[in-house]
Image (cartoon, rainbow, N blue to C red; front, side, top):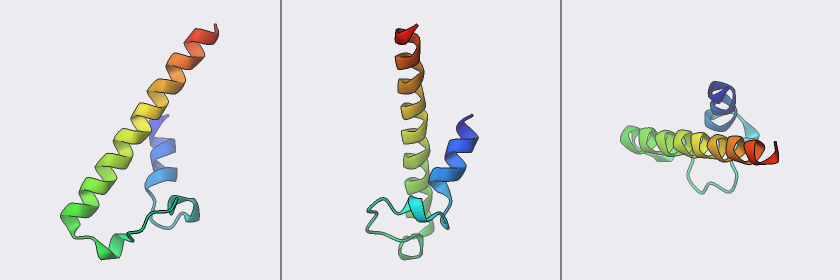
Length: 59
């Protein structure tokens, strides 16, 4: 399930990916690009964890 969300949030060609991001991937060094991807991946994981907790509370 995470991979589906990662594909949406991490793909560079997705117009919804901009979300006010002042940096394009081409302006970042490879190390900065990796860090940004890691941060976005962790953000996605945390949002999914929150969603799971909220769903359990509704049961």
